[in-house]
Picture (tube, each protein chain N blue to C red):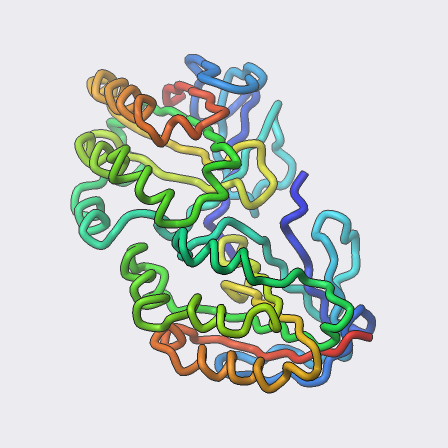
Length: 182
Length: 182
């Protein structure tokens, strides 16, 4: 059975303590004290105040060279030193989704340098992308980042760079939830 | 809530009468007499002998020009004249899914002419693609086709052309279920 689908449960317990919840754009979500992450299949009732569900999938934009560079340098999740985390759920506009693959790729990389920018901050920032648009969720993606406290400045740079891109003009709902390992 | 996710229920009732179930490659599925298609959310218990679930999504390979050509010429599902249908569930190999986007695109279109071939048979053959790899299903895609009895020869040509492509070397499980409106 699938193990690629995970629940991100905001509530009163969990592995991650919530430091801040910032609404970057669009509707806010309810404030919670903790975040728990569980495989969707084994989660039989822990719903918390809210649950966001997403699945990992194959790469959608990265080309062969980019993918090889990413694999060579990226870090795994769960490093003991990475006690800081961020959950940034994002929704993109309908105009993004109705574009063809080459139009989206052009904005994603040629104009916004999404992969190239991300590479600059590896291996310090470990990240994973969860998809959720196709399963009736309020966001299209749950982006997850883990890093050591001393890499906080790098992380802020990464987030700032991405938010200034043309790609981000197509983001119409974004939350920024910062966490510390509890 | 989402209305992009559908259950394809093989059992003893449904809008479509099963004419044949052919295992093209990989494991077979159990024989059934009828197929019912219901929105996943409103299906509260009809599981039949088997249920395959899939969701419609954004285009993954088609480029702007191809997409415009497709939109200009494609037919809607549910035409009264289209009393024949085919459900062809497909699974692709791990080696397909671990390729980068440009590698998959190259095989999909430059080498296999998937969209170009499909266009030749529009508007006679109406089709819709449902994705299911990401939600723990036994297949990666449910491909659905509707056509008039007089277009049966065209449909056989289309299916034969696609099965001879390089893309199809990455298909390791395929069923071919033929149906007639009941």
